[in-house]
Length: 114
Length: 112
Image (cartoon, rainbow over all chains, first blue to last red; front, side, top):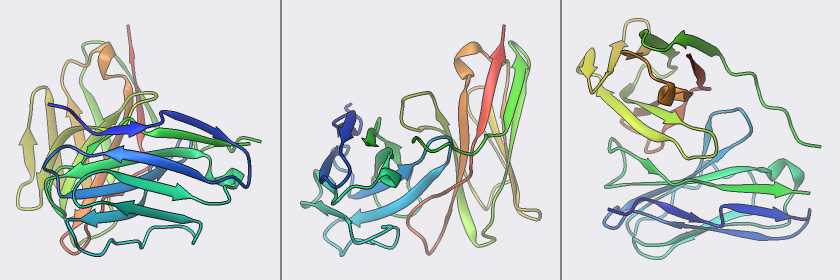
């Protein structure tokens, strides 16, 4: 079946602009995660959605970052007033439920802030 | 300019040899562990997982070993192939945390 998809695959933007990244999870997966991966590093947790519960935003690095998810479908991650340190690959993952269920990752969006 | 990432630990093995990739985890309360493989330009791909009530689990050509006493996890790949070249990450999940905590990764290079 279809895996997690993300768009765009690459995004180049100028410092100060807003960007919106999209994630389509695997159908039927109630949990959705966003992670950030800087060059040559591991993944940093950003935000977690589980069904209709309030999202866990504990990993968001600043108030310039926000995310939304409609029900158990598409999620968007928005970065306002982008900075050069926001340059990274943003990865989305989904799982059947939260906790100890395997997370399946999308291909990521590579964001470059000039 | 572009930031420079940390240098990943590297492991080079000859094709056909066995590989062992090690990982130390931090949270003694973690009870679920996963190994992911990440090829250049792609998202992490699930390889194998293990729960804390086990100390060994085998998959196809891969084995994960868990030593809770020293908080150590290892991934063994049998008969390593060129397609195994990638960065390998271990990740942990504690019962109270929903997100995964990832290690820094190991770059595996398979030599012909």
